[in-house]
Image (cartoon, rainbow, N blue to C red; front, side, top):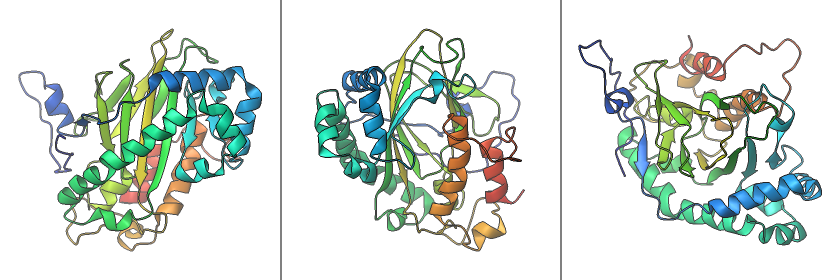
Length: 316
C-alpha cells in the first residue's frame, strides 16, 4: 500500500512547467491492491431487482425505517446527486428479517455482504495502523466498536436528469477513511489538496483510500482530509462500492497528540464535539445533497457542506 497523505502545509507555487498529477495530489490518494474483488455482477443484479420489484425494495427499507436502505431519490429529483444507493452496516444487516434476506440472497445480497466482511478483515486494521504512524497516536483506541457503513452506488443513466454530469457532489467524508472500489468506469475525481479548484481524475480501475475529517482532527492535521466528487458520463452506467470507517460514536473529536499541524477551533481543542454529534450535523447536508432530506425552513440551500464543517473545525 502506498503511503497515506501527510498534511504538511505544502504550498504549490507557480513554475515554468505544468505540475504533474503526482505533485498536485501530493500523496493525498492511496491506491491499494484489494485482496478481494467486488462482486459487481451481483451488485448490478441487486440494484436491478430492487428497481424492478418495488415491494421488495419497500420491505428492505422497512427493516430500517429511520433512513431506509435502498435510496432512489434521483428518479424524481434532477437537482440531487444522480445515483441510486444501497446503504448497509452491521446494525442494518442485523435488522433485515430472515425472509427478506432469503428472498434477496439469489439477487446478490449474500455476495455483497460476504465481500464487505472479507474487506473489513483484509484492510481495516492495516490502514488504521498506517494512519496511526502518521498521526503519532494509536487511532485504533477510538475504533473499538467497528463503526462502519457499506455503500453500493449505481450511477445509472435512467434518472430524473439523464443529461446531468453530477453523479456525486463535491464533499469530504466525515469519518476516518473510506475505501472506494470501482468497476473500471472513470468518474471519480479528487481535488488537489494544495491547489484548490484543481480536480484530478482517478483511473476507473483503481481502488482508492481517502481520509476524512475525523482523521484530520484526531491526527492533529497530519492526515489530509480529501475532497472528492463523481462526474457522470450521460448514457454510461457506473458502479462503485465504498467502505466507510469512522471512530466510535462516543469518541471526542480532538487531537490525540499535543502538537498540531493546523489551528483548530476552541470547540475542537476543548473536546466539546463527539463523533455522534458530528455525524448528525454532516448527515443533514449530505442527505439533502442526495435528495433524501428536505432542509428546515430558513436553512440556506446555497451553503456547501464542507464550508459549514470548516467553520466548525477551524473556527473561521
